[in-house]
Length: 410
Image (cartoon, rainbow, N blue to C red; front, side, top):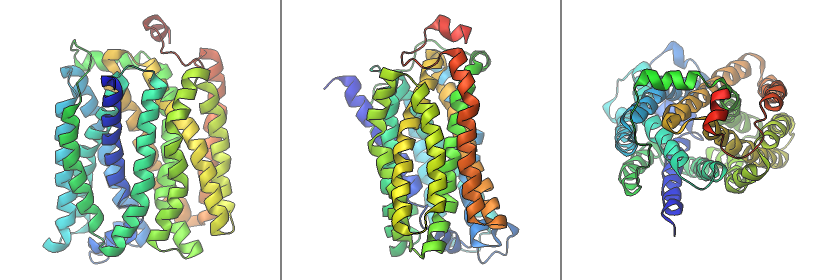
């Protein structure tokens, strides 16, 4: 096996483990925040289970947004990836372990729990984003490399949700323990991969200026934002919607979420390779339009069976969009700026998750689930329509990586 192929598998495994550990917590998030003391602290942030769950998820992505750029810039400035991934994984494991210890310690206000969650997110995003950057550094086609990342993300989410539901029924703290162990394993596994970061160091100011000169990166960033917004929406609002509307337990909820994540995961690699052949425009624009319609169909489904079918369709469409969007970041970014370019994409994605939690949770709490599905599905459709002129004008539909001259003109 070629070294690039072997490293692609190892790096995809690391991405899988990070997402798997994250999704372990989602199906039983309501039970988890109760176990961590949200119902005992009388905090204004935890007035209801939905509020407490929303802020628990928001805190992690707050850490993502605040620190992902720091990790990316540090990696590009030093010309190294591996040491930062190891540090992020091990520190993230400490964060998960500290959360797992909260019930044993007792008397910690919910705001303290949220601070631990911010720390855990700030560390974990370093391992996640820089592993994605190491995949960008590999040869073999940007669509294939990002497809490998996408299938890892999807599989991690697809398996993490149902297994997390099962673990929650055994013990609400079990998902935190599992996440701790996985991140320790990540720290050891990534050391087996050659660090292919570009040689030559640059100052942080030069890196930021280089990215600023490429406004076309805003296109994949915008799609990354709204795509992750829908994922955050399903992680929080979708979970509670399925449980309240159809009376599902956490384990069954995890299986229903897997109806989305399984096809989303399994089709990432072939869809990424497809975007290398036909370009990025059709997968991103047409896929996003249909994806938004699929979200509306999930909210309108009158039964569990039809909701599951709609979730499968949304998963297929998500697999069409995701790797092409990430590959477009690689197409546009200069080699020496990949760490911070991918950090920018992950900032947009993390803000999208935050938007999914906050917008979805707020609308659902104030106006009901039906309107929340309408709002989120419509956002996906609108961003696709708005982006059509930009794709046509810039001719970004081809799958090949842009040359340096092309990037400078962009």
